[in-house]
Length: 410
Ligand code: PMP
Image (cartoon, rainbow, N blue to C red; front, side, top):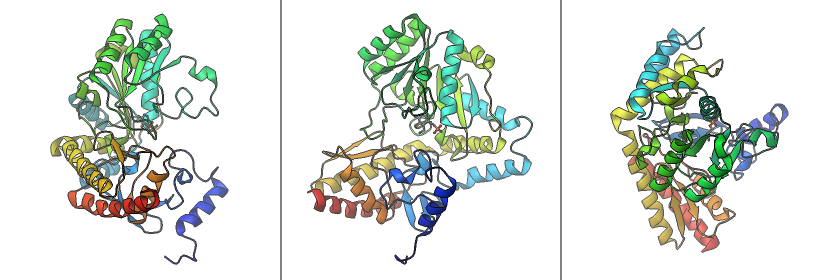
């Protein structure tokens, strides 16, 4: 690219600030990233994506989770195209709704029923609504630092929310049974539910899997209080276990919230629940203009079937482990101390002694310049489309990136 000419990305950003407040909103605002990161993308295929200036990246963000089988997966796209010819948003749902709910009940082990929405926030919020409707109680226990959406009851950035919006939300520390019990005591006889992430994947922090003791304590507490146990599987759903992420700790929730990966990038979310919460789920008024759209449901059916048929989770885990092992080897060669955590297919890579993430962002910036798209603070994602050759190619870039970090900080 001619460095004297403005990039297409820069031109788009300049146009955007005129007509979009701040140029971009939320977590995908590139202003939250180092300057070399692009804001705009033009296309994607498999595990690769191209920015608006045509630069190609091996992608370890997977559209922040939704891409699980690969961008433009042929089977998912064929199912979506067939449905698109028939119809998408109609006066009511199509047969796909029933087929998808049947497939979910067959797949998600705690589920006796399913309902569908658009975004993860729709799903987490509906879980809370159903919990309150079923119990006629108000308090919801939420882990400190956990993300369940950007809406007043749970938005981590409170600007524009009121304290009253969170009046019935009480905090505890993930994996800390004593703090959970303290929060439950504060809720008294007004406990409607406890919501927990699939694992502790707080922004900028090492990721931590739930302990079996903690998981059992959440279940027991909810059973004793008659409250709803809710797993927020929006980020991890269908990447850790097809039956639901807490199958790994042997604990089944009453309600679970899903979105990101369930339709390989099409807009869809869901709440799955058990029979105890069926009546309340049937009674609450919940809806959205696009919640019955058939194309995302056709995509979800194809996605779930393919994930199951191909053993995609084991593959993602293996590719994540290959990346993790490679990064560990490189770190020791370059004399750097890494702290890799999370399930291998949903990694976060932190450097030791890097509270301000300066090393992490230098590493990611240097990897990006060499065609690898990573994040220094957020969960990253592997997909079924990442093959050994992609991981090895990415590791060539990360080796060079680590050399730069070692020169700067070694
Ligand atoms: N819960 C979790 C665990 C999430 O990771 C997210 C999205 N990052 C949400 C809820 C909210 O989903 P959405 O952005 O689709 O509303």
